[in-house]
Image (cartoon, rainbow, N blue to C red; front, top):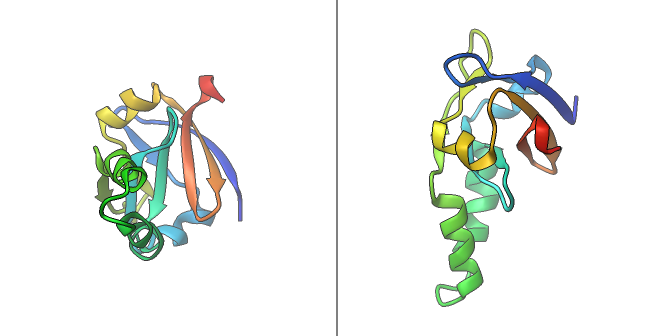
Length: 120
């Protein structure tokens, strides 16, 4: 299974996920802003089982609150189209990450980091 891929978005802002990693996203996808000027692409199961519990934290902890704002602002959920293995990236995500058409995806543990090719 690969840990890196490059793709061009189509005219409808769709990213084609390589066939060998599509099974990871059988539960769906969650797309959020990353820690820097890039995006996080999570399998829905990882979001539900790993990220959500981590975001609960202490209700009065400002760091936990900041992470909640960061990851929930503009968060989208969806599914990969079964026919061609594509997921649509929202324009606000592309703007945030500075992505025009060329996308670099790198595995970061249990999720993927999506960046503009020009920023890698």
